[in-house]
Structures are given as C-alpha cells and as structure tokens.
Image (tube, rainbow, N blue to C red; front, side, top):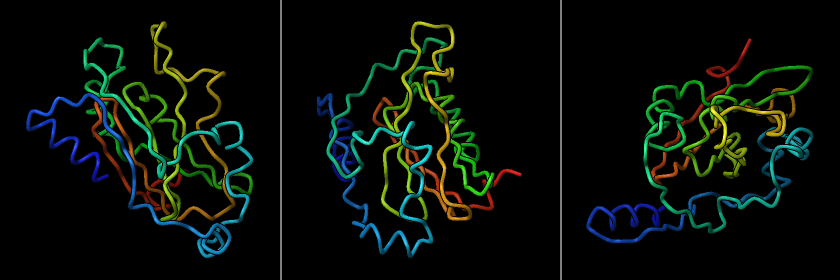
Length: 192
C-alpha cells in the first residue's frame, strides 16, 4: 500500500512513472487451520463454487503484481475508471450481497461484475481474514455491452459454510491505479 501511495505522490509531483507495483504488506499472515476454525469457517470454505470461478493461479494480494494506468478516454461504454468509478462510489451498498440458501452462505458480487470494465482487480477478505483476489471475467470489448455477464464468464457468487460469513471487506483497484474499498457486516448485505 505504501508503494502505491508513494507512486501517487511521485506522479503528483511530476514523476513520470507509468507503472506501479501494488503490494499489500498489511495483510496478516494466517495459520490456515487454526485461524479458519477461530473464524467459524470450515477448512473447505468456498471450494465448491469457487473452483470454477476463482483461478488458483491468480496472484494473491501478498504477491507483487505490476499494473499500468490505462488511458481514461470516455467512450460511453463504461470501460474506464473515469466512467465506472462514480457509479461504484454511489452504489457501495450494492457491491456484495449474502444469501442464506440451501444450507450455504452465498456471497454475490454481481454488481461489481456488472461494472468490472474499468477495474484492474477486485480483492476481498472474509471475517477479517487474509485479502484474496477474486478474478474478474474479461470485458467483452467487441460487443455493445462490454460489461455483460455471459455464460462463459462463470457465476458471480461463491459458496461458504452456512452462517459463516459475518463480515466482508472489498477493495477495488481501478485501471487508473486509484483504489476504493468498503466493509460490510452480514446484516447489512443479507438478502431475504
């Protein structure tokens, strides 16, 4: 996070850097079995639906990944941070939802997927745990609806043990290298 702040400050002071390394050094290291049990989660939390949605080879937040700020040319197709950031800022309450369904907690990110063009990355943490990358489907740039969710994109939710989700933190990295985040408690995002 400090790397990103220094990059932004350097850019504001006339630094000509085009890329930034985004690295989270604040994420706590977790002892997988013991802390997972303390949070009330089973050790196979989220594996059933995340297997098809989340790429296990995707970089974790603790790893170093370089992102390049993309040109911010508004096209009216909502594919840049300039276009989607105001919408996502105004709709933070809709970023995630939890549904208690069929003996599972389902965490939905449909709203973020619907505005994913203009994002580099979405990260999340469950119950104060370690931040993880939730890979976003590609934008469908060659269509009239680049943000559309198609069958080939997978499903915009993940499955967890029933009643296990008490809080969720979401962090977004926009394609202009700015960030936004929000924290949610179960009762505020629980769907009927």
